Length: 169
Image (cartoon, rainbow, N blue to C red; front, side, top):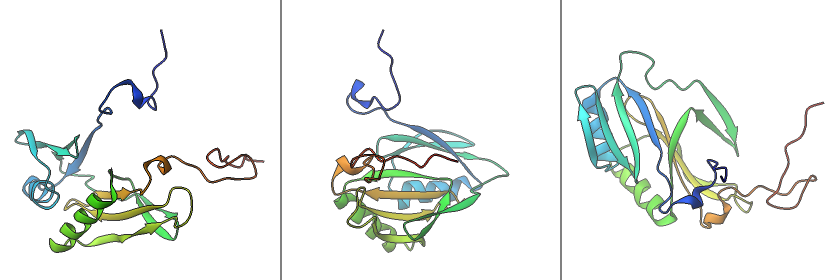
């Protein structure tokens, strides 16, 4: 039997979808944000949670009383202090700009404004960060060339696309 790995997305079309549950402290505000601002179709729900279709992926907002939307740290990435944890979706460039415009029109405050990251390098991408009403950080990004999503820069340890991390010691 062939071993199946998480990176083997060729096994089915369309690609497998992810499921992510995030904590919120106000389900009404979450519904306004995910349904109204982001435009996610609403799925199943109960008194303490709602399923959302986020570009074909299942995001569930769960009402909890503590540990909501805590950014536990920030990581420097190409000049930005990126909030961690965060989640989001890779869009095509046109949909990225449409979403950025819609967010601006809705008055969403960006944690990191829409801009190009890694300009002129492997992995060049548009990126933007913002928070939902509970403080969960979201990143949406777009690559002009989808083949660049996992491409690594050339290093002394290998050719382009097969970069190596330095080894300790």
